[in-house]
Amino acid sequence: MDLEQLLLELETLPMERRRFVKGMAVGGALLGLGMMPRGLSAAATASSGPQIPVLRGTKFNLTIAPQQVNFTGKVRTATAVNGHVPGPILRWREGDTVSLKVTNHLAESSSIHWHGIILPNAMDGVPGINFAGIEPGEYYQYRFDVRQSGTYWYHSHSGFQEQTGLYGPIIVDPLEPEPFAYDREHVVMLSDWSDENPNTIYAHLKKMSDYYNFNERTVGDLIRDIRDKGLSRTWNDRSMWNKMRMSDRDISDITGYTYTYLMNGQSPAAGWSGLFARGEKVRLRFINGSAMTFFDVRIPGLKMTVVAADGQNIEPVTVDEFRIGVAEIYDVIVEPKDDRAYCVFAQAIDRTGYARGTLTPDPALTADVPDYDPYPILTMTDMGMDMAAMQGMKGMDTMQGKGDMDGMTGMKGMKGMAGMQPMDHSAMGSSGGQKNIRGPAGMGSDAPIIHAKTEFGPQVDMRAMSPKYRLDDPGVGLRNNGRRVLTYADLRNLYPTPDPRDPGREIQLHLTGNMARYMWSIDGIRYADAEPIALTYGERLRITFVNDTMMNHPMHLHGMWSDLETGDGRHIPRKHTVIVQPGSKISYLVTADAMGGWAYHCHLLYHMLAMFRKVVVS
Image (tube, rainbow, N blue to C red; front, side, top):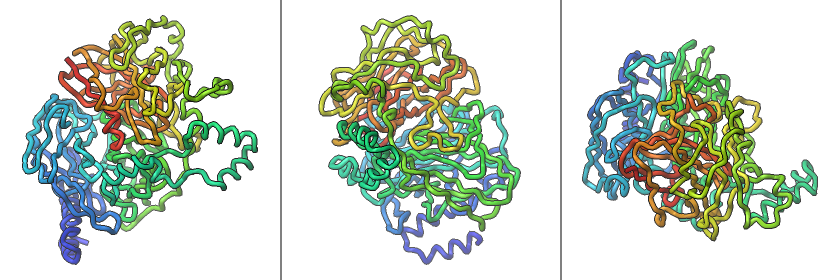
């Protein structure tokens, strides 16, 4: 069907839906007609069906406005950028100065944050931290130098606007040739949509934290466990979970009961599709722009070679599958050898829904959608429990832990760890940090786990007893599934570590919460009651997160890179978002090279209000 025929068919749709779909269709047509990455032919970017429009250059006019959409059969109002959900792909070039005029046509204040982009403080776009926001009818002029390349994204940092559609991809083309070759590329942006008002979703969670969870244990599960494990073991397992008043099936706060999972703005019923020619190398830029959903991504029949993480090139790693947390980004290259369609399958971590697309040589071809994996079940490892210690445990309320470097599984070159000198922990604190850290860069922390007094009280219902580094753990639901799954232990920067200094101090932060009351915090203190974290300009420090909850938390530090410690100080991978697994700890290094106030938070949207800190570099 040509563009004229498509536009004629659109005239039969209701006006609001017509405007939205027409915009998507025209954008896709323009993309196929030549709006392509530099150095690639039009054929190298053309795809089947509606595509995200591309804006390129150095000057951009973006409008934020309500937009009628229909992802589920019901017309709802989204928050769109230039009339699109997702917003347009912004294509920049490293070394350029970009200027973006963002006008707000909403009835409330708005903002755009350029996620993962290193820029001046006043351009970061976080209301209350580094600017006042964009009031209704007003505009804000963003202007900054682009000092990096890779795949990134943008989104609102105001209220729940990100949930309602205010997000979009960013591609920054490099000045120098890339260290890998490809013939064609596609952006694959994952997101979650609900027909419910986000304020209603949040109210449901505050009243009943498992409101959207319909996979709790049943009598049938009990009978099956007794049959498989025996009565005694089943009784002991159930007894431990019951004493903690927790569920081993609390995987996601919000599920497919209310969410429809989107790929490039297309529902599973519609399905996004991207073209390829047999024998081509195809680059897929995966961006998780969802509000709350982790996705497990695979393309049955194709290996994926991961070449970049969070926009930064890594030593290529070939896998069958990867988990992508909220706000994370992975670039992969695939090489289809056959003239057939392949399903791009992104199942939600809780297996209650999926986003899907099709890589195909022919728009008429589609691929079968694979079955869901089994529903994930949390273990005591995910609770940060030391099973040997638990045998003699008398009371759950007094659990405290200690560091365990033996748990830093998956690290390379760990032989030197045993010779490290013991540390004086008298200065350890939530934001002050330890000033005599001797752990070398890249190797992680051997500091003991210290639970502050603020972690004890009704606002915290769990403390990990023995959190460990689990860098080679693919995570709940992906262990021993017969596929090669990417882990953080696989990430190694393609280039030497830019700042090889050892940390001068360490900050230990605990991710805390009370699930039943849907209360989230850091060190047991919500953002409204917390003091800023003070950093000294130019210092190199280590941040160690301890996850005292049973949920994955994607932690995002604005303005500076998070150099993930995976055991090799020479090639430390750089990330902007780091996933902290349940009951685990993880460490990364930060060079405080950006003056001013910066946001630091969990990127799960309904956690962000409280699991948040302000970082001040001075």
